[in-house]
Length: 417
Image (cartoon, rainbow, N blue to C red):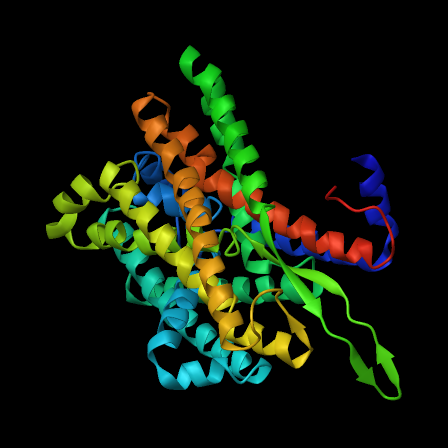
């Protein structure tokens, strides 16, 4: 372990990227503790102490505790995640967006610009909703001018956070948005550990077993792949004949990573949040859409499966892959090039995605069900539950994989054996 850490630190570019990422994350944590103008953070925090097991406690985890202080980054990066979900869904049904997606880098940049605009709109609406909620609960004293100032401040904080995530992606170790969520969840880990230490004998005995089992399952499935053999025919390049070779196309069992879990958490936050602002729906929400409710967990699992298939289809297009193989003289042994290859890849990917989607849903939902009926504390289940551990381990693996590629470029021994 110390050997590959030393090797990573010897690479100047990788060292600069790691230090830059650490600096951005430190600034993010600083902004998560600085309260918005005119906010009494002690009153907000005392209000959150009585919100265990509600959607506000879940959103507080994803904001890294910033929401309980009503800090500059109280909204976290979730408005950007929600905007990304909306734009990706619209890409399927809006022909103009679908055409932009096929235009390559220029079209992707245009879609990203639309995502940023939508993020600002969602952040403004969400910050206004939180300010109204806290004012109605009597923990925020705000007139019209201060109300507008708070909304502008929180919206600007989310916009700044979105920019910081993009900076990590370009100049850091990559996965900027995922790393911000990763850092937010890790801040609640000490609370979960303290709750586990102060828990009962059953909790002390079984919770480490559950956590280790989740981590092992995540690593095992995340690294699992189906290798499709690829054969290349001989080609004439200039005046020379280049011999063909054989390789393989790796199709990961879970090609979507932890994105479906983040998407599902963002969607499931809508109904409980609505219940906070519309009192007439509070009874229905409390009965069916609390994070510890069985209906909530089953619906979250279903959304994870749906988003896994959706995001996998966005990431991997069998038709484009088949066309690329044919252009470069490659083919799958026993499968004709062109449409038959695309059909074969689509069939394999569909069958491969099913266990990956079920794995994500089970790992995210089953521990919460076990914790609920096993008498575990809410702090433990929310800070160290299946969804949190799944996101943390998944993002850590993706980040290590990107750092591994940087190491391999310089012939150093990497992270992953």
